[in-house]
Length: 525
Image (cartoon, rainbow, N blue to C red; front, side, top):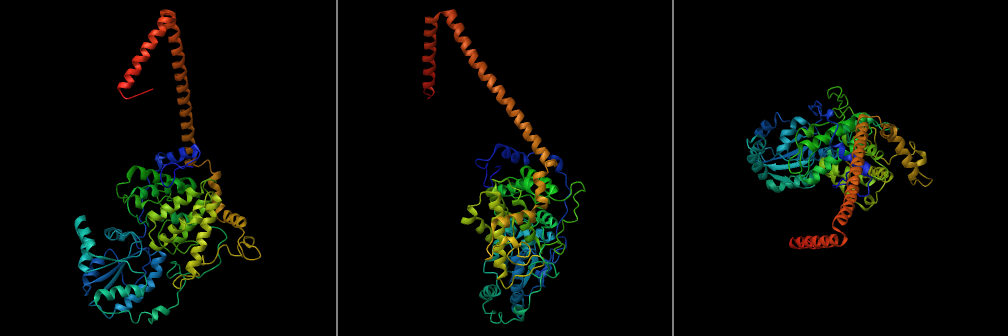
């Protein structure tokens, strides 16, 4: 029921939910005036020793002795960027003996102070690599006109090789004319043990036992970071619909009342300030739905300091927790709508290129196409999350034991002894019950919280629409009845006044004339 993520209304959905979703983006205007607060102002953690900031990038480029440089634009929260950081360190070490031939710099786009630079380079996913003369990079950053910046950007080369040290060094070697890849695999850095939290999550705390219940502080923080951390993909009607439908759905199914209210406000803002044919407004990308409206937008949990996550190692983990919590709150028949809506958000806003590609591919698989109900969606997300954990646990660069969420098949036997049978196979009914318990402490409040301001507003609007519709139907029926009775009365009076035979002749003549007029205009009975 409700708005279908691919546009229009879902087929076969009850009218009630369709009406509610339409009004999600129309009302509740008293939530508009929220104060905005920037994320990432110096709180993000640099991944490289050669990182630059918006305040010194131009100076660093001008100080380079080399005719060409490699610039990485990354996000410190991005798992793929974190894994690539070790490879880029190898690249940095390998090119160190050639400062007059090649330079290497990196900038963290998760720090919102870097937004002007990253916007100029039209970053569509992380990590992004560009190659070219330092002066051209400076022109992209400082050029006064949009046309000049675009022309400078087109003259740079976007590096599309695999994000590994050998591949990147092979690219550099092909550009400078000699091989500098010989000693990469023998570099001491390649044998350095990975410390927990150094790449896969920003916390340096040691791994501990898995939690028995989701931390809704992490869910809230991840929700608040979706737009500030977002990288908008190709602007078209699909992008607009994907973002609008995601916040429309959040306004109904987010486990926290304050986030439902804020999502409603954002959906309304999207309708009011953005259109399918225009770039997404920068003001919209600063919005955080869970910030307290009553406290003037101040929210202690809404920071980008990656060390203050309660249970998750970082943003992507928090986003998974949000998806799981959302799934348990969709209507029983809305499994496919929930999946398509989540996939649309990941496809249009999520910045980690590799992560995005994996999720979208999984969401278009045959197994995903069989999702129909809420239970299907909950279990599909759980299976997909475990699949990601399994894949990451096999990667040498991945943190197999990151903080509170080790890359293991979850729930473990200790957390849910009844979730597996004697052969270690999953018992889906027991898994689903466990997921309801794990994510349901606040999720259950969504169904029970009919007294919330959002729900009260929706209910009152639906009731008003139903009342208006009833009045319209009654008036239409009365009008039709009056027309019918009037026609009968006219026929009766005509026959009495003119006589039956004369009346029939006049009526036949009028009918012939009417048919002739219809024929002249191309209409036929």
